[in-house]
Each structure stands twice: as structure tokens, then as C-alpha cells.
Length: 316
Image (cartoon, rainbow, N blue to C red; front, side, top):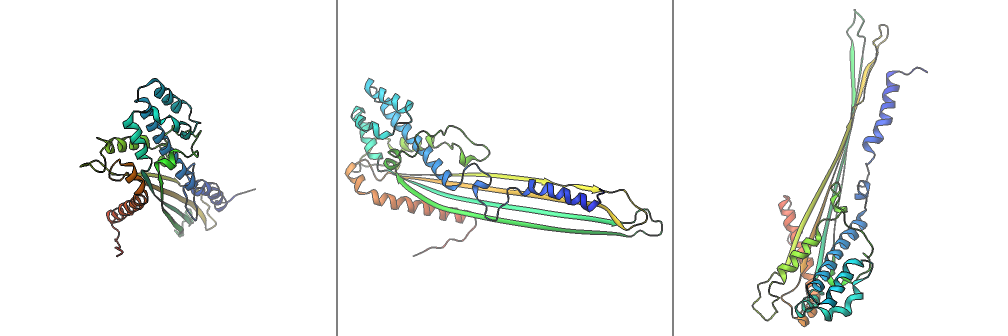
């Protein structure tokens, strides 16, 4: 069977197009390119936060210094399959200052603000050249081309709010392994939340002030993380045929295929611990802290929109 230039070019396109646009989607989503979908990413972040809180439990028992408290610390670290609820009756082994902090932080509210933005672009261009290159009486040539440029974008924004106690006593994250960073798609790997929680605790508990004291300790803490992953690829197959002298025919053909995808994942974390460590006041103010966290996330979103050059809409 004899193949002409168009047959060859068609074959090249059939092979090349799936390679270039294999990740295309009408509705771009993280799972098109990442190992986790949106729900799994949220669970993954929460479980890393859970591990960070569990580490704080470990530190409190470890630095309580008694043999019994350190034995509990070793169990917390080694038995990751055991829920923290199992160690609740061991709080009496803590130093008084750690016991007070543990009860105070139980009502601390965590706010997660997620923003996922995905942009896909696909470009396909083709060029065909016809002519009679060996005809001495004619220099007729004809060039034909076509192209298509497709772009799609998707943005997801949502909040999640929970307390330290709700997360630390949850069993959702038991026996999960979260010890790897993902440099290709960072939001699906560990992102350093243990250090974030550790800094928050240290900043908040300097002096462990009570609400009645002249406290100037940190009571709100926010951190915004942005991860950008850009993927691109291109192919440029070309066919050049031997010239013929008696027919006006295809001389050469080429196709240019390009695809890009940019995934931007933003995570805003906000902690609200209220004014101090008076346990009764902390319990009474829990609903207010939850509302304060949501307000803080909205404020950060507004500031982010202004920084991006967008227009801010103020609702009275």
C-alpha cells in the first residue's frame, strides 16, 4: 500500500495529539494532573494539621519530665494508630502550665481557606505547501494553513472551620502516612504545617497570660501558602516529499502542537485563640471565635483580590 503525504501527516497527528492534549479537560480539575482530587487534598491538609497537633501533645508530655509523662509521650509518638482520646485520662500527669494550655487550646479555632485555580491552553497549527518545483515553465506554489487555540480555566474557593479539639480527637487520620514532600505538585505532599503550629503555639503562649492581665500576646495568627505548578509540552512533526514533475502536488506538510497547564493552589490558615487562657471565657467565646476566623479569611481574600488588581466590593 502506497501512502501519500497527507496520509503520513494524518498518521503523525493521530499519534501526536493524544500525547500533547492527553491532560485536556472541558472542566479542569486537580485530579487531571495530580494524584489527589479536591476532597482528598482537603483531607490531606487536615491530616497534616492533625499530625502537627499530635506532635504538640507529644511535646507537652515529654517536657513534663516525669517518668510516667514521658512514657505517655513515647506511646503518642510510636502508636500512631491510637487516637488521642485514649490519652485523655493522662492529662493529670502534665505540668500544671501544660495542662492549662492544653485545655485552653482545645477551643482554638482553625480556619482553612482554599483557592484552586487551573488554566489549560492548547494550540494546534498546520501548514501545507504545494507546488511544481521541477517544472521549468512554472513556479506555481500554494501554501495553506489552519490553527486552533483553546483555553479553559476553573477556580474553586471554599472555607473549612474546626477547633483544635474536634480535629485532635478525630479518628479520620489514623494510620495515614504523610511524611513525603511532593515537589511536582506540592499541595498533595507535606507542606510544613508542624512548623506553622509550633510557631503559633510559641507566639501565643509567651507568658501564658490570662484575660484579666495586661496581655499583649498573639491571639490571631494567619499564614498564606501559594503553590504553582506549570506543565507544558510541544510536538512539531514535519513531512517533506520527493518532488514530482508532472503533477501539482503536496511538497511538504507540518503540524505544531502545544499544550500548557498552570495549577495555582493557595491555602490560607488562620488560628483564633481569643484574648487569653481563662477557661470559662474561652468556652463562652467559642462561637465568636468561629465567626472571627471566617471574617479573617474573608478579609485576607479581599486583600488578595486588591493585590491582584481586582475591584473590591464593600457590602454595608
